[in-house]
Image (cartoon, rainbow, N blue to C red; front, top):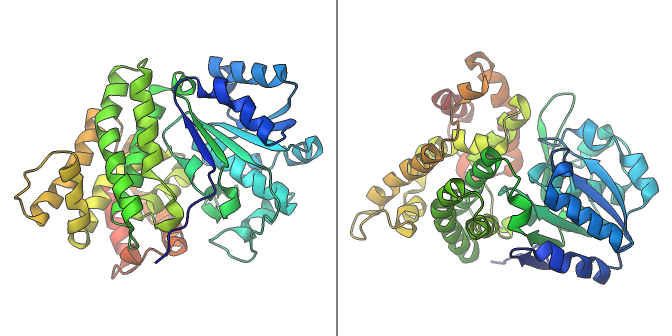
Length: 393
């Protein structure tokens, strides 16, 4: 057995850590020209504008590019020529999972000399025709404003603008070098996005517990992540200006996806990737839709793993059987989703029942790419996935 640490060198966490530490970290990296990957909505926020002013006050040149939800490949590649001419030596992503994923991909694109969307997909895990090398690459600093936790992985997804399927890319050097968890940057995040990405982090933690290749590090941290998120997500929803509650949620998201290269995330993630790409459903919402149903579906294979969930949340008696404890787990997560008032049915997002067979094909591609034996070993996978989506409809 072996445990692989991802090359995240430092994580700064606390109120105002961006103001206090960002410039020092850029100077340590000898940065002079900063590519900022963000979203249109972030441009007008107070924390973001203050950060850019600070960068300029310290004689750093900047180039801004904006990403969109689910990282459409054609939009991702729009500014590549201008970015290459700018020649950045630091990348800062600021926002949710989409700008963070976009920054990872742009780091890889700049390293490999890729110039178009068509050149990109042969490097994906799903296609596997070309190998990502990244022998040299630009350091990436992530400042997340949601709880999607993409800043802790070496993985990124890009949606093909032609077939609308989402493709996975992975390389250790795509991992952000530094992460800043500053709740100040989350204050203007829309409530629905903050809370739903919190459920995405819950999804990470749950699927870590029943990963087919578990380890004590990720299992222990996933349980602590569940505890923080289960109790602090409602608190942060009801007290949106409380920075301590928001920071606890950020730490919970961090623990939910720690060195994820050591595990395989499961069925809820594979389904969620393709629901998001095909129907433009935010990933936090896809987790709210699918996670309780997937947990219930996998229960007979994961009694022991799911029994830990009510135990760590203090929602069961210690002398109950493993099966009894585990049977509570899906309803506990469903109850949290309902308490947070997150839409959690496919029809809430105008998905027609007739379109389900089409998206199932993309989901099966995603599952095969993930190579999760716990899922692939299902006897009639296409039939089972179709049934799961129909239940979630």
